Length: 201
Image (cartoon, rainbow, N blue to C red; front, side, top):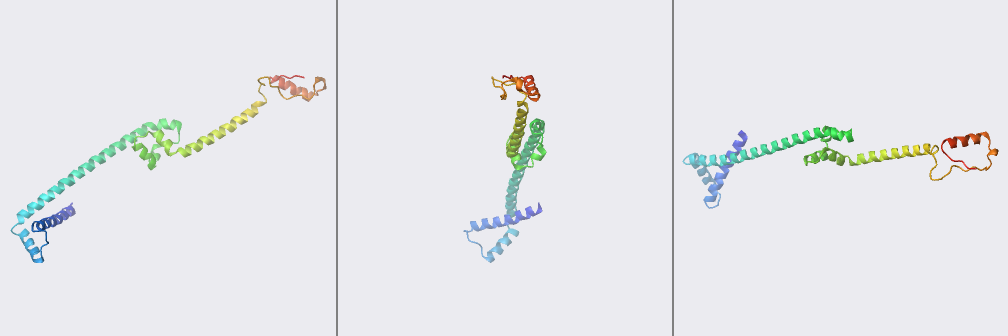
């Protein structure tokens, strides 16, 4: 604060000197006149000069105080906004974790993109999905591929046991006379009949 005051006093002296130059016709005083000015402001016009400097400094200090107060208010508003956003994230965490178990808002706010979205009023789930869109897409594709493979395997495995639908028959027999079938072929036919297949000769 002391440095600021010294700077202001030096600046005020320069301002007063400039004002004197302007009132004397706009020309800079010569070296001898400069000494006369110094003598005048330290002597006969000291009180007027000091009063003038005090007014200048008071005006500047008032301006600085206003600016500081404005900055404090803005900082308080930002702090309140951040507290509100964190409280909302805390409240939304359980809901988002039902869909995305890896979600942790404390970790996510370290990501500047996520933080900007939350600051702009975007809800936690939407911000998480936007930031992790590529990862989530890859996970969904992997899940879909795994599920399709599993379903295909189940379809193949269950295809032999399914009842034939819409009049489609099973494998055709090459022999039309059942008396010519051996015991292995007859056991296979019995099994197919038990599974619901209709056999015709």
